[in-house]
Image (cartoon, rainbow, N blue to C red; front, side, top):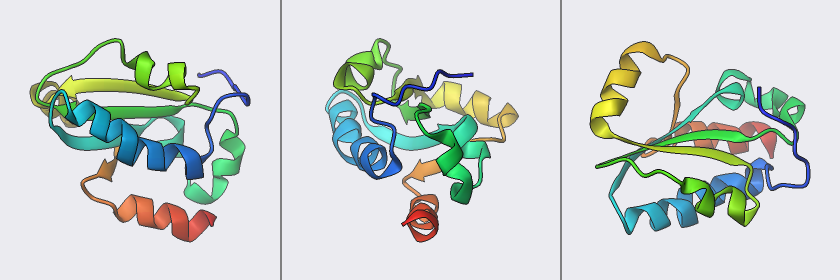
Length: 120
């Protein structure tokens, strides 16, 4: 279970635009971003109960042409409370066979729309 860190940026109205815009564009300069998934406690918790996750990190997987390590320079180093993994399409295909708790954030934006409908 992740630590609560209220001093970091964890609020959905700050984190989601960062993930879907600046962070995605930064990664895309290195390798194309095919899909972005949310997993962990935020993926399992109904949106209307996200207030219970105050200070908790965002568990994010980006599926790209090849993996990238040391992604903390784009997340925690910028004070965003994001646990980012960048994996290859091959690893994602294998993972999708077993993990059913992934929620797609990009390119499908249905979940994003439901977040703003339920929280704002």
